[in-house]
Length: 452
Picture 1: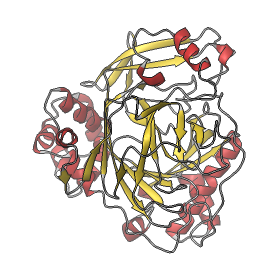
Picture 2: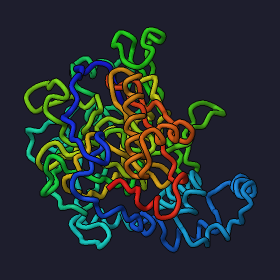
Picture 3: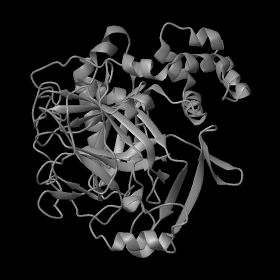
Picture 4: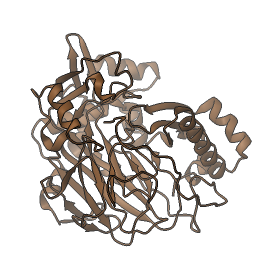
């Protein structure tokens, strides 16, 4: 979710110069790597394994055609030695399957753990539940003056049940676009996001990196897309569509789609539009001391609106303040790159669940994202050209430092094999993200290219 109305930013954070690449930093440690077995174990129960073999909830004709085109048999694929490879091939169909299982009423292992609150779980650390209420949620700001709701250890998991929709949970089916616009005008400088936080991480200090793994993203059963009336000046084309509009849609988790109009169905890909840490001092003009708008993304992450941050993905975010201070909100059921009208398919989450790991003194300057198939470098700037250049430089430095090739060679490789996409153009600070396929790199090199 996004806007043009928050204060501008001009300054860049202090850069740390290291041999492995100025825009990421390597610190003095090589890191311990990223073990993704936890995602596999969380995703595959006996029930889900059986459904993967029988494909109960999947259009069998389409799926068989998908496999036939690649010369693979379904059972051969699913019995392959690398289960994560199978998940990558199944792609959107596995996402539909996971939500179909949730929809039939059987509680998942993660949901049971969330109800347990402080229960110990070996692969999740301690599970902390952060409810949304008037004490934990604030409209459209990151407020670093607030005491932490909780303080967690590295390796712990946070469950956010029943998160709020925009405007402190006031946005819901039936609310008019004029009402949404009025709420925005009544809160100048603030975003529409219902921001939960802060959550502190024990021992986090400036220069550290917070690794945030998205474990569960279960939206409510409705979503809304809207553009404000043109007078507010939000979205990409406010003068083209001065009347404004809001459309509410039901989310069908069995089909993993939403009906936009008769014979028009949009596939769902839930993600959290906003998750960030306390921003560095001086990067954004504050609304008041210690309080910044939730609208523009930056070196702290925040409102990146990066649609690839679905279940199973990870974002590595630089720490700028003691305790890191995690803030989140702005739940999405799906979004197209660009987010041109102002919004994604905005919703709230029945549960958002993340696991957090602290990596000491890595001195990154910008967030880095990762999925099972790509490393993703971000570029963020008010000027889209500058954002593109930043994403390119970050991608070149990442490839050069990790793959141990020259930056000139990395420049060429990114030109022929990386894809650069416009993340969003409606958050004051525009975003471009570089998609670097992991399949470019084989064997031990791929292992050595881990982010931390």
